[in-house]
Length: 401
Ligand code: HAM
Image (cartoon, rainbow, N blue to C red; front, side):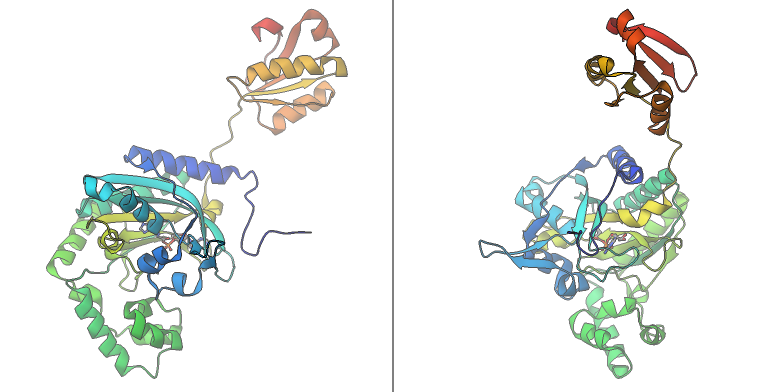
């Protein structure tokens, strides 16, 4: 039997999946965001340049191949790079003003599959272009909080500032000097990161490395005035809106494009892969991808990790279940059911069954009404209908149904 690839799952009539997308979409639209869809396949260079060659995502996890036209392409590992490419390619950077987008769809990372870590997974994300103020960062965090509130999901919000081009380079130098002093004690990965992207050592999963980094200089203590005042303002805004957070100076995110605000929402109910959403500001990325410098900020929520946390509303009864008691009534059932479908939900059963079996079938699909035609109804030109919510039953003429 041919099976799906490892780490790639079917989503089989999972009401939670649809409910999540509908809820997140409704919230994003309330915040003035508009839908964007970008291709799953992009030039590999896009991700190398944006997510960064030294990141694990690009260095180890890309679904990369040469296509029939000899193009070096890659299945998108995340959504931001494609949206920024579309923003620049469609000249929205030249237009100026504010552009806010939301998207959802599959992302691909060749990771070692485990609970909460898939090779094909889904994200719901937003990207906002043109607002330099940290008020927008706060708004996006409030948006994630609104989405999680609507779904009944608890979380811890972690917050950090990754500085900007005024303070990050000096900090990087300080950190490298510190790492030089400990080079024989840190793991091989961190030794490599020291040369390629030193701040990534801070989220190394190795406990002995983490023990050393407790003493490492913190960017947080060396922010320039602008980054410091933005961060302070963000904290005041979140406090004012009653959103609790923890400052995590080791939160560096696994993608290289961030500056200033970085945040992650984590859940303590889903095991080791606890990040359920992540995002931050990326003011330099549009320019990096040859657009006109444009401030930007965004986030993405990981859909699969959330599913078990969603508190679904009680299913409400809706629409019709429609069946026949005998063969002769089947065509009338299809004709009338098809008419119902023009404006209502109508599930038609094509096997003649007993009334009891039809009532059971209607209940199973949470139909509001069970409609049935038998010999008697056919002769009288009417449909027998039971309201499964209120309990009443009646016969309705074909042309009034
Ligand atoms: P990210 O933190 O790499 O950020 O991914 C966002 C979320 O996707 C994670 O918090 C997690 O819930 C989910 N996720 C990531 N990898 C996997 C996986 N292998 N299996 C299942 N779920 C996973 C980004 O992708 C950025 N583009 C977010 C962003 C948007 N920043 C600014 N704008």
